[in-house]
Length: 143
Image (cartoon, rainbow, N blue to C red; front, side):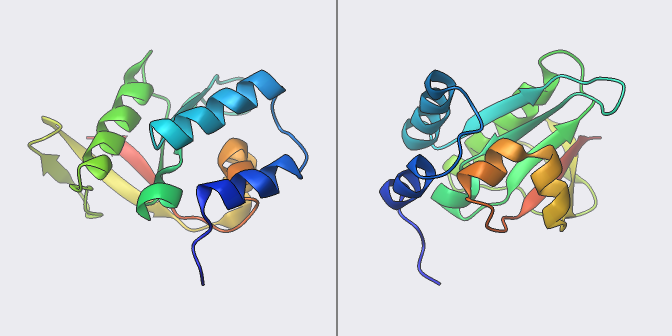
């Protein structure tokens, strides 16, 4: 299957129903275009914990997006940011039970999530960006 270019993706998104106000949507797309990744922080409530996830890694690098749950203030964003930096420089983490990564200076566990409905429910911005096409996700656990 042919990879969709960023401009082709933008064209399709402009014709789809927006999930964000236009100025926020522009910021997300700008981050994905210029920084190759946008990091989303979702506040928790009585139905789900807080969590943080990436959007853009699958498009630009063919690498699964990351998600992490219930991290202390700013830790989720820092974990995702650290991981996406490794992907950008061509040193993506390997999925294995525990990875002691010298680049990160802390051990992490990665768990693949293989459930399209779950990604639609919990990662709606990524689901929108990928136009509801299936995309891989790795759940990140600091160890």
